[in-house]
Image 1 (cartoon, rainbow, N blue to C red):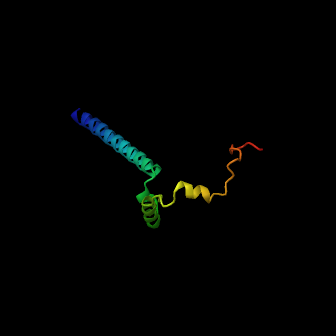
Image 2: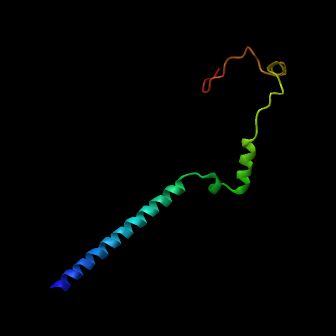
Image 3: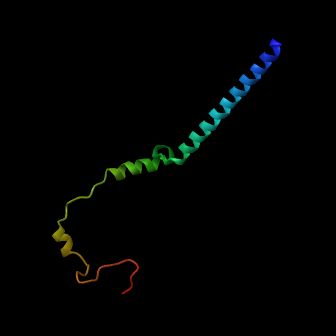
Length: 89
């Protein structure tokens, strides 16, 4: 009689272990899929692009020209109508 209970117990423990292993694999697969969905520049960009990105981050707009210099050299018409996308004049 005790042998029968031991076999049932062993079967139940084995089923629980298999179920836990299955859940662990599913959870790990879910985490791997989530990692693939995230954009990580160090991982997803080629090295040359990463260096280019660092160089672009270091750029700044210079204040070497005053706004009066820009306006005096401008070819824009100050009397022109304001541009509204999708509207034909």
